[in-house]
Image (cartoon, rainbow, N blue to C red; front, side, top):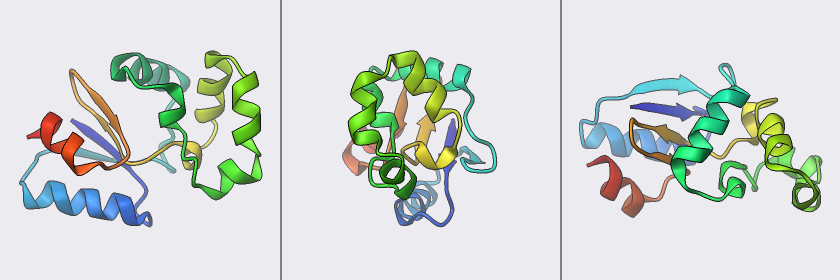
Length: 116
């Protein structure tokens, strides 16, 4: 299992503590230094069953600066995935990538159901 995080993000810190407290084994990946590729994002999106919007960090400064709230609805899925692949700060975090599921953000109930 891979967990993509931004260490300065309080939600990511909470998620990492949650994983450590439960002794979950995972590989950590810095989302900004090692931005997900278009191919990875496409695969994760398809595997997740989530709406593509759930992959965007809608509360992030970059999302707001780029005025993506208004722009996304006019973009194709491919364009949105390519945009996400340009900057890790656009991606909702943490992202958990396991063999049979993908989670975005930290929702404790969702994590308990899938990870434990």
